[in-house]
Amino acid sequence: MRFHILWPALLATSSALQIPPLASRPELQSVLLVDPKQQLDELSSTPEFEKWVSDQSVRSFSYILENIGGVSQTLDPEKVHPGTVIASPSKVRPNYFYNWIRDSALTMRTLIYHMNDHLSNSTSMMELRRVIEQYIEVNYRLQRVPNKSGTFNDPKRKGLGEPKFLTNGQAFDERWGRPQSDGPGLRVSTILGYLFFLKGNNLEIESDFLGNVTFIYNKIIKPDLEYIIANWREKSFDLWEEIESHHFFNALTQLKALQDGQRFTQLHVMDMTFARQLQSTYHELLEYVTNSGGFTRPLVSHIIETPEFYEKGVRSGLDAAIFLAALHAHNLEFGGTDNIPYDVDDSHILNSITAMAADMKTRYPINIRHQTGSALGRYPEDVYDGYGTSLGNPWFISTLSAGEVLYKWIYKYTRRHADIVIDKSNIEFFQPHDKELQNDGSLENGVIVISYNSDRYQRILKSLYKYADTFLQVVSRHVDRHDGSMSEQFDRNTGYMQGAEKLTWSYSAFHNCVRWRTKAADQIRHLHNQE
Image 1 (cartoon, rainbow, N blue to C red):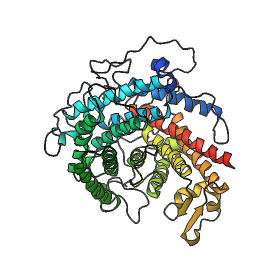
Image 2 (image 1 turned 45 degrees about the vertical axis):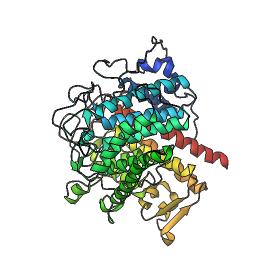
Image 3 (image 1 turned 90 degrees about the vertical axis):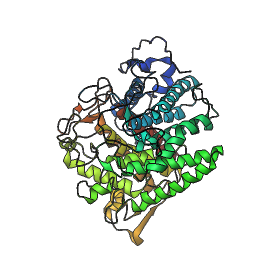
Image 4 (image 1 turned 60 degrees about the horizontal axis):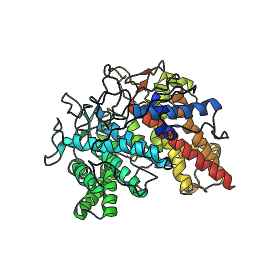
């Protein structure tokens, strides 16, 4: 049985906050609404900014749902099947009215994380679970659609590397950058994240078509894992769909999928022969990511996203894909990723943000007005302007993800009661946030250990939190203040939005960033109250 979500009539709202009508649906009220009585303290910016963050979080989540078939009130269900995520409603200049495997997987993660934060509301959770299970059903069908990348049943399951499909589930047959090898791994981690969520809350699959966990594993997850095992060594296009090579983002998210697959087979004691194959491939790919892949170099402090193009002198290696990889290859709440390298606290990841911000501070004229935070683009050499090729611009995804890394770093360190260890690998990142380092930049014995919850420790946390806020503050200057809509990019000179309108990934990135902001603030306040 296919899910069909039937919504009651919209309720009128007198709120001054203008949000899409979806937010007035009673089934989703507790999911969408953010507490307007936010605690204002030394972590807070201005009351106006705090209110904007709260309002925009509501709007962003609502816009995400409005771009998903079966729950949207604007998408034609005959043209956009239930569970299908459109990248953007834009159909011309540019046409993003497609279902990208990558975008949809990351969008569904936002819904899963949001459910995990709102366990007390069973009605809202049920509605979101229906959307997610519709997504899983759609992807079962998409896996089996012959396409320009290949077919489901060929020896290496090449068809699973197809990056996007028409919104009605048919293949996209025009020229494109294919294959894109990150899609299957992202889909694995998203669907397994949902199954881990169900298991942790003693819930079962509701969809009659999907039936049970065994069906989902054997028919959807395992084929994607088989694709990774067979193809991870092959060249692929990057997440920006522009260059064919080997990429850090693809490799790290594939590694995460293999780890998730191992964990799932161990929990459910199933297919142990395949589990051993997953384990051996995991160790091969781990060695590649940390060593032979060339993503790190002795004289380069940051990650190199695409080593081949770095070696050719075409790219610097800096890329927002680096911190996107760190975010999407590590799930702190659901665990199981301690053995995945390059988390948000890795010096190479932090240095990548520092280097990107420094580069784009002068690259984009609009950054002159920003004292600390910077509007970040995809990579320094970018020439895609949202419509064609000229000069690249800042992206909402890139700018928000930089802030999210910092909030997530705060959460990770405080939750684990970890000391801050500063050495030559990360001193450049920490120096602006530590007065003692600014006054005396030397490292005694090559390392400084700042004890958990010491005064100095708390000062660094608060400084990093405020630095992360500057990326949100940059975004606040370029979002549509009337309705909260967010496009793909904003112009490097004027600051006005351009490119694909109402980009789903932009909304997902905003919601994720604010989610970790809330968690980071709660942790810092908890430390303060312990004194």
